[in-house]
Image (cartoon, rainbow, N blue to C red; front, top):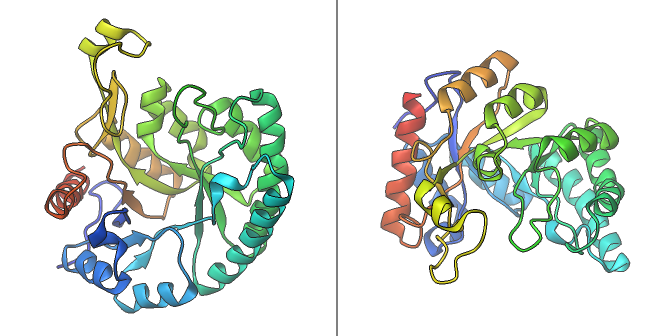
Length: 295
């Protein structure tokens, strides 16, 4: 089957490797399934140069690679921070040499209860060396704006305020993994955000967010005393397949096209209605592929 692309912009469509058994197994088998079902690329999290060779040998592009243990880059333990930063500088050098172009991360404070301004300063200090290594080796550290969970929702670079400052303070080795689902969850206009940050976007996640008005009426911005939160969500919102939420995908792809984006659109599957079984996940990935190809 020919590799699918979006209708607007003709961006290659791939997906981010998940954590279920059928995806965690052999990269060769996963790549074969991806290619046979029209996916052009895979995001493979933590891998080796040999894994990249296996992937490309199967005729599938590498989308992004995760930084190592990125939740500990800002560890409260200074010795651990130093070790993780040094390992990531080596990781960037090795994987860039194998062809990686985008290194995925979130900016996760080791002490989520600290002042945001203090955590921001530490983020620049900790991620700066990794971003400089990316710049040196012709790659980019791409930041996803996952805000983190309650009660702190402490992650940085999730909104224009800190992302704008971070890109300036850290320099051109840092870029954006654009994922509208997190912006919608936070109430940030995801299209306006993309218009501002499009020149910095080096990777894209196709994931959506459904907002639930009846729940917003029932609970406001508070947690429920009785109801359970949604899987991959909370009470008033949930992450879902592209096309099942609020994201304005045609506008998104038009802006990416006009900005000269040349990367992958990678489905990140987080939907309580599909995750958890091989059958459900494959069905969801194929549905998402077809939706994105139609936009």
